[in-house]
Length: 149
Image 1 (cartoon, rainbow, N blue to C red):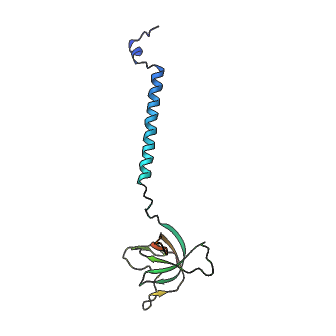
Image 2: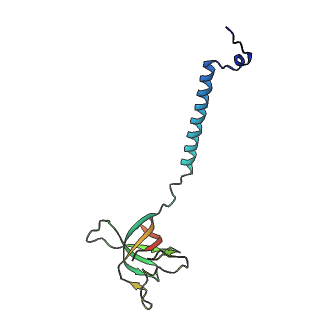
Image 3: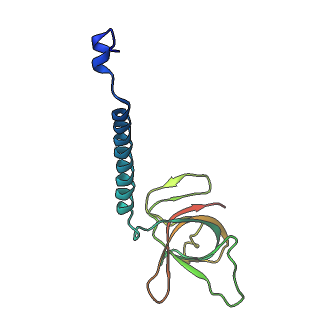
């Protein structure tokens, strides 16, 4: 029996056609998601350096060479292990009060006396570091310093 309203009869979509439209829409969404995730994965460069945040103690520092010996908290250390030396390339650093310094100076908690660039005072710091494998000996680079004491 035909519908009394001619407009309603013209608009009604058969069930099999409705199902095909929904399936097609879901397929488009799936293709979009897969394409988006694939593009994001291709954009992720495995060679991008990702800094690591470490807290620990600086046991030796030289403000002329901008090098420090650093012992990370919780890092196992054997009796014959040498010091881990970091190159400090941070152009800005944060002092114990939280003040950020952008003047390219060496962090005061790492600096030696005026007439001696070497300091063997033990200071607590937080470092943001990069590790670089040079083939023979790994290179450790501090890109951010936060003095904790």
